[in-house]
Length: 333
Image: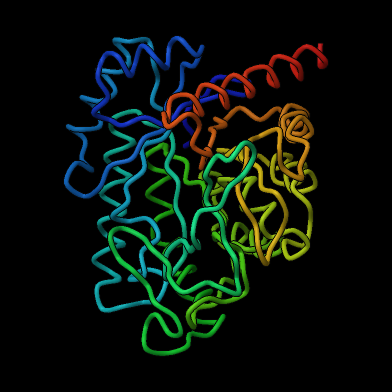
C-alpha cells in the first residue's frame, strides 16, 4: 500500500531527531512544516520513531523522511559481503518500524564505497563548499569508514555483480515496503562516475540505470530520491538532463524526494554552490516538479557555509526555495 501524502511541493528542513525547542522554532519561522532526519541502528525502532513523531507534531511539524545510516550506503549489501543477509534483515525491520510509526518515506543509496570528495573549495563570496576533483580523488567516506584508492575492497567488482546484488536486495525489501506503507527513494551515486576504487557505479549514475532498476523492483513503493546536485555533477554522463528526468520519473509517480542543490559545472571537477550561483537555473527545476504534480519533499542539501553559522545558509536556501514554489504555483493557476 502507498502512504497518504498531501498534494503539492513541500519544502522541508533537515533536522536532528534530538532537536530542541529553539531548533524547532527556527524551522517554523522559515515557514516549513515538513522534516527529514537521520538516525542509526541504536534508535531505528518503532518506539523511537513514534516518540519523535509525537514530539515534532506538538510543534506542528511533520516527519516525512527518517533515514537510517546503518542500512544506507552499505558495502555489505552492495558487494555481497559475509554479513549481507544480516543487513537486509535489519533493513526490513527498520521499514516495518517506520510503517508502524506512520512515517511515509526513507532514502536508500547503493554505493559500495561511500561518498567521495576532495578538499573543500571557495564559492561565491569566499564561502567554503564541498568539491570533487577526479584527478585528486583518493578517499570515500561513509558511516565512520574510510575507503582508500586504488582498491577499496581488495579486488575489482563487475557491473553484473552490482546489478545482481541490487536485485537481491530490492526483491527482498520491496514487499516489506508495500506491506508497511513506506516509500523507498533511491539516491544517485555521488559522484556519479563510472568507477571508483574498483567498484562500478553502474546503476544509479544514469537515467537508463534508474529506469532498469525501478523496472526490476516493480513496486509502487520503490522510486527515486532525485539529488539535483548529483545529476548536475554527472552532466552528459547521466544520459538525460535533470528536467527530462523529472518529466519521466515524475510522470510515472516514481519521484518521492528531491535534494535541491546546484553546482558550478559537471565532472570531472565541480564545486557545490548556492542555489542561484550554479550552472542550472533552479527555477526551471521547481517548475518541472510543479508540472508533474510532485507531492514529495524538496530539501536544501550540502549548503555552502555562510557567516560561520549553518542557520544563515539554511535560511537563505529555504527562503529561495519557498519563493520558487510560490512562483510556480502562481503560474499554474
